Image (cartoon, rainbow, N blue to C red; front, side):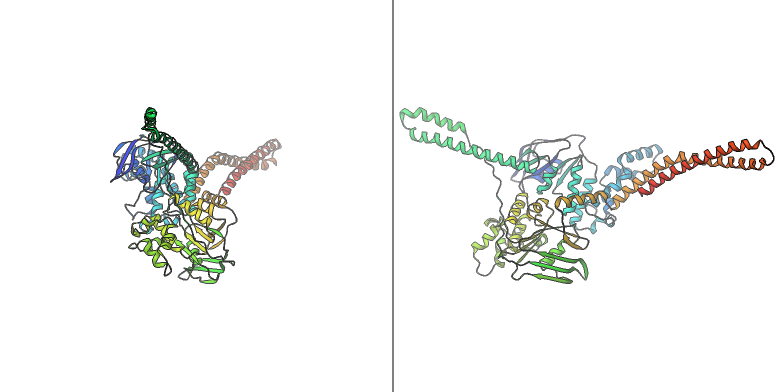
Length: 618
């Protein structure tokens, strides 16, 4: 399908690829991993032809149709559903041709091709994808310009999934999704028979979907069989093997060099010394030991509190006198690890703001422990950082008077910001580095409660693992909103479901919740499911009409026959009074009428059974 041979590509003075090779087979689901900036997104652009290699070849088989998620929307005035449907360019082009003055033969060809492309189910398929990605029926006719940037990214993802293809290139597709829509996407990709190349920092989705992992490192593309966990174990074994080989090489060279140093100038040993010098040269350089950079986060330990941190009783929260959440009766203990579940828009962030004192209750009661310190993280806060200051300057301005430089740098270092990064302007930091800075800022006072709203956005897979380990070592309580299932599974032991205008404890586990989401998606309730249901009903109705047609025809014929037989019977009954012979004929007619009536009843019962099946379907 796709074969990369001796690929070379340079970005300015940086070498991203040099002699790299990769074979992507049909139907494979391949995760692409590596440190930020190693060239993962560049690789996709080289495959799609948006960039051209400096050397080597990228060969794509003729029957391979690749699609990737667009970075922008050219015409934001288009309506959402129309935009997704137009991702099938051939179908759109043929439909436009139907408006032209064409011959009957040409029209027939177009209709045949449209039928082959599935024009009758196109709207249902597009609607199903949009519903799965969180759009509601009312959104379908809204112009794209009315949606926020995150929802426009979802629209581009929907168009990519709908477009005809047999190879998908997906670069961080879950970044703008909540847990519910990420679960839908994961299930959708698991079922597809298309080839999938996936760049992701989400360990869960890499484990669930991928049967191969491509590691981009040192300008090379190395393939590992298995999912991410298997890749990680294999890579650790490789690194350990390289470390042992390098240590052995060092010991052998040291032993040989020791002999040379002792006997090089001794005539009786000179020949042996020269021999050992040649052996050292033959051994060459030691095996390279490639070690992933270590990332560590550390939350400061809070002062212990024994009573409940926060208690809500019959609380109501909302904005502008409009309730978003009601009947909130919840309690957070000092060692709770809580994950908030629920689709975007249901009120998770509203609840987080209530718990962090950023939103006052409309009614009800909220009790907070004395001396409690609460830290609140929201991705939007990174946009409020002063880009003209350095991390050191910003934290120094928030620390207690008299704080030493060592204390300030230690707090920044606890979240992977070394001296170099601490002295860089915030405006020049990456998204992940800004997230680390925000974590350092909000935890400077050793909080008792961490409220984290999507903290993993912009964090690479190593930083996510560091965050997870830091949460597990943290001695306070945690309330977490994230679409990263791996972090929830490993860090949280209590689930709260925000749904239907309230929040309650969810009694199942994450697998139960995922199963309920997939069941809901199967049953549906959006426009796509209604249209699918209508299409099914139309097919069933056509089948029932075909079954009823011969029965109804026979019933009509029996009605005519019975009418004639009954008419003749009436004539004979009148004639019976006049002649004796009519008695025999009358008896014969009685039998014929009885048989016809039994057949008529049987056929009508069959019709009723068929129609009863129709009612049951409805």
